[in-house]
Figure 1: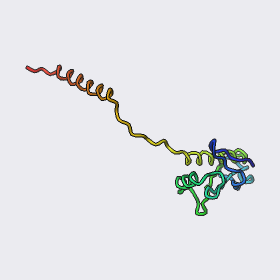
Figure 2 (figure 1 turned 90 degrees about the vertical axis):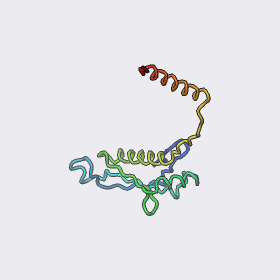
Figure 3 (figure 1 turned 90 degrees about the horizontal axis):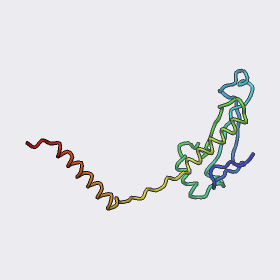
Figure 4 (figure 1 turned 30 degrees about the vertical axis):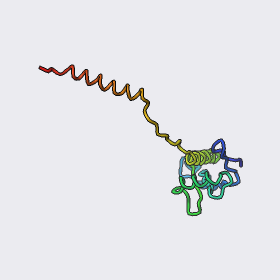
Length: 139
């Protein structure tokens, strides 16, 4: 089993992923009673070699509610009748979850409005006030 590329810099080694299979509750008719097409992928982010210390701490903080008491992230797929397709789907789900959890939003840097923009805003307010003043019938 191959490695799972999450981002350009993070790749989960295939040896760290544990797969288990079960009978699916999804589509399949009579086939569902005899084929183990449901896939469950388990991965432990606390012990992985794929992440540095800071990424690991950030990921564990973001995924804390999704982890088991053993610290494993479990992803399940029973979308199709085919075990291989479900396996690929579960890996894609795991990759998307980890990539989303590792995403750090860009910090907002506070800026001030420029002098020109302030002048334009005040000028527009004065212009608007002049238009409204012109509507009044000062008799």
